[in-house]
Image 1: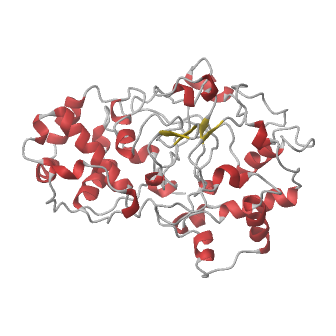
Image 2: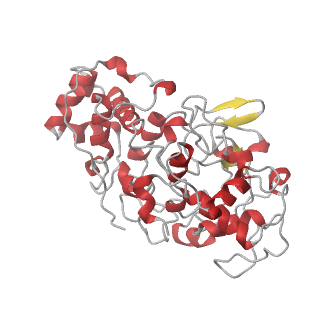
Image 3: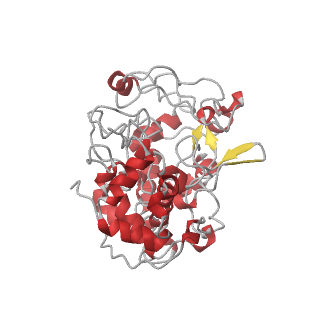
Amino acid sequence: MSRTHFIPRVVFTLVASFSTMASFAADTLPRNSDEPLAMLGSQLYFDKNLSINRNQSCATCHNPAKGFVDDRDNGVNGMASLGSDGKSIGDRNAPTAAYAAFTPVFHLKKGEYVGGMFHDGRANTLADQAAGPPLNPAEMGLTSKQLFVDRIKENPAYVIAFQKEFGAKILADSEKAYEAMSQAIMAFEQTDLFMPFDSKYDRYLRGEVKLSQEEELGKTLFFSEQFTNCNECHQLSRSPIYNKETFTNYQYRNIGVPENVELRQKNGVAGKDFGLLNNPAVDEATAKGKFKVPSLRNIAVTGPYMHNGVFQNLTTVIHFYDKYNNPNRKLNPETGRAWAAPEVVENLDLATLEKGPALDERRVNALVAFLKTLTDKRYESQIK
């Protein structure tokens, strides 16, 4: 697959006021792609000049041509992202930005943490998330918000756009200018480019196509409480804000994912990743080892899998879940060795994981076939 980025045509005709900084109402998604704030956000999203070495943009790690994930090898088989400095390698797999606009703000509901951005929910909104990477020394690496403003001022079109959208003095205040950037990128990520809902599954629901027998079996298994528990975490019973299934309940679970030893041999990170407990807003011991349930949309083309990219293949993921119920699933098919122990043994969700019958290969293949139907139409040619 080509690694070139899809870059939309952007024309600045900005007329809105600074009041557009307010969060966009979820029930009015998606935004129009020609909305001035979204157009500004698209320009910023693809701009490599906003990294310390002018070699990395938001799209580098969230590539629209590859399901909004990092499709680079990065010297670690794509398990984590490489920073602008050319040497810093992350410890987590970059989550997709597709459909992320539907993620609720981080909150506690009936004893369960829900929502938030990143694998641990530490950013409330898309704007909060967008504000992180430019100043992260292991990512885009800008040394200050003022340096961001200086880079913006290098481009006369940006100066005009920021002033028209946020006021004549916006670039005189680096804090407000930086916040404006994050709001603009959020607006872009709220457009239908990120949420087309045009997968084969969506077309099937609209009566436009039929599923194959294998896909039908996979769908039955996926949504059945008798045969699998997939839908317990990966079904929202249709999003109330958009009447579309996002295939996540946005909650947090510890499913026993092992440490990615290979990645850590490359990035030098030591110690356990406690997931949700790393969120500054969380201090309960019961959060240790839990990670946000991801959307399954485009899952067939957005590997590697799990929060740390430890599995390369989608079939391996199904085998991993099945090992909790199938005594014949003793080996990781990617290594040929026994499954590694969970990185964090506390708070394993065994009540869900051990609640289902063993799967034979026919049913494993059917589940994979169904998951492939969740691929947006523009990525279907990338399915293997």
